Image (cartoon, rainbow, N blue to C red; front, side, top):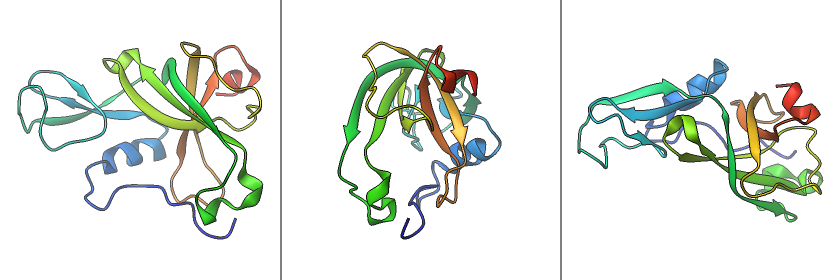
Length: 149
């Protein structure tokens, strides 16, 4: 790896509680304290009721694959040529009102395997070499990587 993997809180700080939660081994997503609407990505204002009452709540890192893609070309120089291929997964979280979050396949998941739309997955929070923050990674339920979670 030729540098630090660019991940972590955005400059505006709106998502910092999410990243701090990952450091603590927890998946935290934003929820409106007034109308209880889940939201990801974080916002200052609830899109449902326009409230500024922002809460961060624990979410079970389990869901279903909404979409996925296998990348064969490193689009970030920090990834380096040995980091490909890798798989990115968009997961719908029933425990968070269907919010969808992105993550890569968990360590040990064969990139050639891919995922199936609707497949059940479990999230793991992993420390990644070259990353200043832990990352949320996904593994199919019932695989060895799921058991390691």
